[in-house]
Length: 123
Image (tube, rainbow, N blue to C red; front, side, top):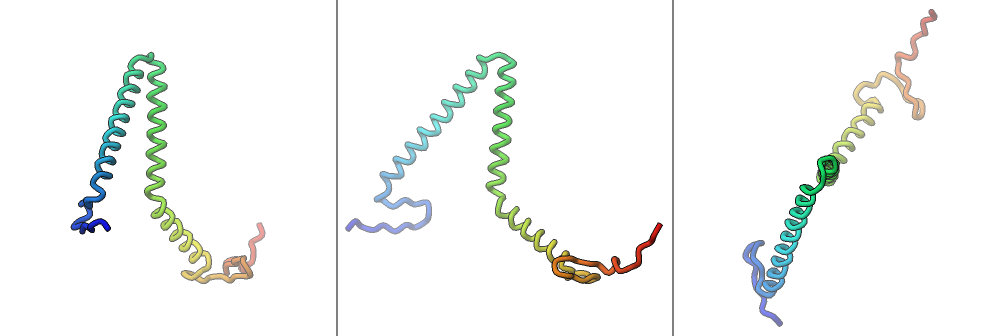
């Protein structure tokens, strides 16, 4: 049975996982280096293409950046927006049922306000 180590705070890594953490650091470092290399290659190729193609490339990158920002914003705020929509729907249902101002009557699912009882003016 391996000796147990106590973790004093969340950032401390137990001894038996030290080898695993070094591996993850190496992988993250190589991943970061690969991303930087890919960005450098793309920027170099951007310099080699003509002005018209560069404009189209820049527009495509801008569109994809805005789309990804919109997606991440939607992903980040979906719970609060759903909660707000639920509150708005509940408020609309409460208003439609007439809890604030009961100046009519319901016949099944049809609401008839008292103002409809007045005789119609014939022109």
